[in-house]
Image 1 (cartoon, helix red, strand yellow):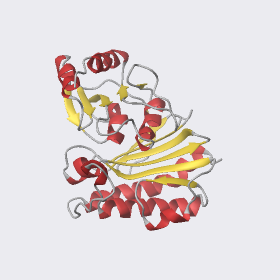
Image 2 (cartoon, one colour):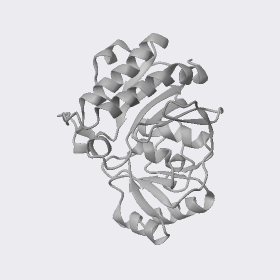
Image 3 (cartoon, rainbow, N blue to C red):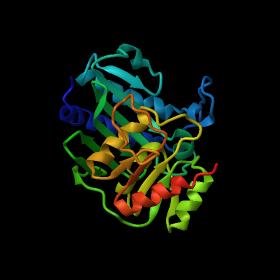
Length: 272
């Protein structure tokens, strides 16, 4: 088993490097859709995705050779890792490639998670455009760094009234949130999972419409949310579980209990 604290320490420089690479290439790359995917969002792929993932895999091969891997893209190094093991690393080099990265319609994310014996134990998540770097390991709290600054402990606090939501959020949910005084902003799933750590954002709501449930990659940020003291829930108010096999059809994150209640009300109003 890989020690979660060691994983964060060893992989942090690679995630920062991958994030800076993705940021530097913004506006210089085009979509190269994957033919096997059913939707444009799932099919989106750029040379930035490939380059960022290879940076992360290079560090993974150096520090944790032989660890099992679940990577979003089929880049050259992927085949050198096994697909099953007690420790599994989950990677999404650019979460939100189409809408967030290519179309600049909200924050995108670089995400790496460590799963030990089927449960998320560590997570690293970068928001390159915002210059925010987050990490956490189970029981160790969450940390935040800005740019090249040092990481420090962070806890979610209620600031502002913005809610970060998924691009395909059902209209009825958005209307209900607006009726409670919230302003909607759009972003990728990884950013939504840590939304209350962004300036002016108090909550995040993700309700997949084009997918049956939150993917294993979509759970990476949830560990950071838990460790930052957020309220993290599924579609019926149940706790959002960090087990890889646990199913969830929505992800709600809130900085405080009142906001969580408003999110749950909004979901109850879904009609489409």
